[in-house]
Image 1 (cartoon, rainbow, N blue to C red):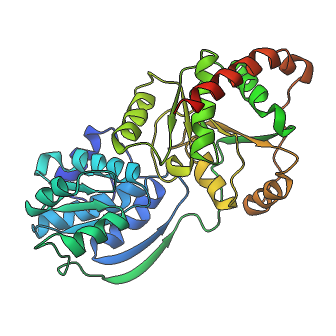
Image 2: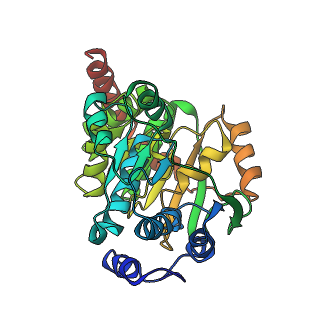
Length: 341
């Protein structure tokens, strides 16, 4: 594995099938082991978690203490994922982790914090809640070191093995085209991104009515339901995950074959995060962005950001429109079901 890592951590990497360090790991781990702060810039799916987790674990072994490291994440799901990696890499050395995120019981978390774990993985809001309200909990022992910037990706970019395309369609036929694409590419696993929680639920209900194995994921679901949706998708008992941007940041879901931007992202940088859910760790992947008559300016911003023109995803309109009647009926059922909630 990477230069300077002790044998026990190299063995841990082998156990989870990490055979060779990624580019960001090769660059970041040696300077992190020297006690430097690292600002690491790398594309999605490039092994950034390992680049900071391994040096933290090695430093913890050299200087064992509670509340040794704090990892802040933008989403709850990413916090759980990072904790899984720490526990897998640190299994043989008895590392104790705590996940401190919203949507979970504060009292149970306070009891976990009282046991003083080595590693805290938290979302900022819930961490502040505990710092202000949980007796005896503070992070005074944590400190910043001397910063070093490591770049293996200097601009916003997508990975080379990602085949990106777009579909220009009238907004009223988006559902029909989505069903057509899912049928045409059947056998793959899909992440379909929607702009709102409401449209995520509507689209999931629509697809289920048409017999698709779809599961929703959005911020208004309880934490247990969100984790349950991810577990089903990861285990491949569901082949389509319909999500808001809650799942676009950092989540490593193996074997996502196709990302569909059903609703185009308002912020161009979110496009990079979304399509980064596929073509991870050297694998190939595809993304299709739906562009309606109202989305042209947003789409042009995305092309400007990534520095390339995307090819058109070719469809035959007559073939697509055969589905219109079935989709319209499923839309009516989905609307009726939604009105009951």
